[in-house]
Length: 61
Image (tube, rainbow, N blue to C red):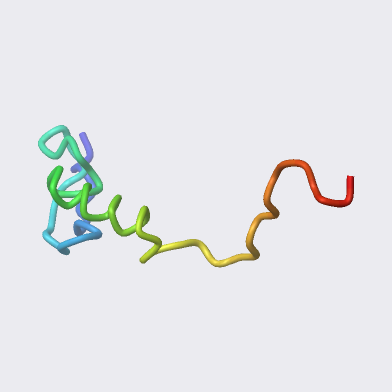
């Protein structure tokens, strides 16, 4: 059987294996997972692109 893939936690860079031993993979822990989520929610991280237009009735209608 193949060995599980080895990778680093995206938040703290701790080495982990892609296995059931790390249920929060690709993060090493729930703490690192929540730190990453917080960065997305506070818009410290975002995918570049144009802003989406606001939905709803326009003033022209």
